[in-house]
Image 1 (cartoon, rainbow, N blue to C red):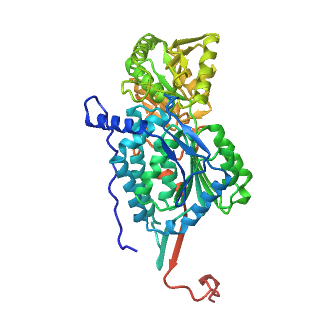
Image 2 (cartoon, one colour):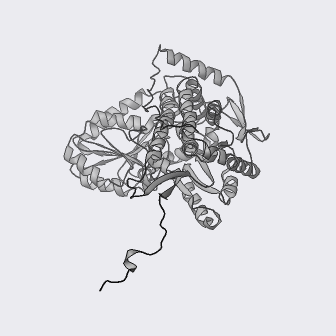
Image 3 (tube, rainbow, N blue to C red):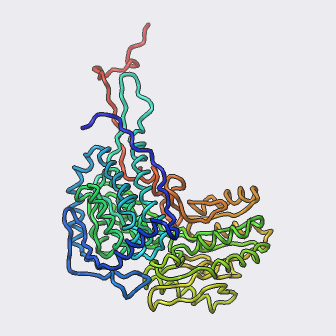
Length: 546
């Protein structure tokens, strides 16, 4: 055991590359993209030290190019879930007993590998497998995950450094942050490679071992992450990557006595279902499991009559349509005052007219494909319904085509009923619904924002009037876990705006913050008395003096 109180490198946000025409970074990424596109990868599960190939394979195609095969993955069954749990439990003692600075070094190395030799590879995988353009892949797959790792290492040391402030005479009080007793189950979504990396690594950083199940449409980039983990020296069994359908995985995981925690990002419905299952099985577990989840959103932009209409339009264009609106933080409902509507409409339509749609390989495309046919069908159903609904106007877009890829035009809907379903229900696609309110009815509009949706993830207020900003900030206190003033409601930055929402949007444990890491430890207080008492009698027991 090394002796010393070690300081880790001070974290700072990874600079975001712009991939401008003629730049070296653009050429390098384009080359990596071509290399990845020209080969087919055979993706195993990673269980302990084994790369498991079952022969039960599913092909992988870019969502924007359905006919082109870029690989296949091997699916498992309940037996593989059991094997992954056993591998996690088998690795647990050595991993949790490893000195914290040795664990820290592994994750700092992962961050540096992603910042350097693997940057293009993880970005290219995200562009091909999840149809993110170059910039969206850069801020997610590379930069945000690098930030998660570096900042979490720093937060880990700060957690370990927190100790009781007082020790009485002859006493030394100490606090130990123990890993959870059992394994953690991480379920990750299709849309964020960074989240897919953070959900298993955050518990692992605190000394836990993990069974990781990604969404099928994220397996292509998950494979690259496992490659980086292994190169950085993460021991076998600490993070086990499996591809098993949800019910089979749940049957095994949530019935296991050593289940200690769930780290989840996905839909509200699935999360609520898992919570119920865990509750029904609570008597089976050795410990009460930690349940951490970020789920859906129906994220809002509200403009005050004093707002800059061009800034509002830009926030809507970017906030609603980057990554095809497939962000849980994407702007999907907006409330525009009547005095600004004409100008906002003009700027928004001009933005939409300039957006190009197509594959991620063409860096001129701002809009790419939605993730799969299921998502395409769900989103297009909302659009088709809006075309025939009363008092509903399709202002822009509305066309959907899945011939070559799952393409849906950025669609703007204007409604007269602020409770129309596209103002209330999560769509998770490039659909923005606008409601125009009377400019002097700002407070009533705030009430609509707060009460229209069960979600409370992100939201934004645009205003030049400080009183209006103050009012919105107060009235919308519980309407969003991430609240933005004069900015779009997407793009939380690790170390600056830790991400998470409340109500139906999740447990608000703020990914990439100390708050999240505290969920993956179980504190133990230790009191040491240097000179022990040798007589049970307290002074009060003495007889009164005459």
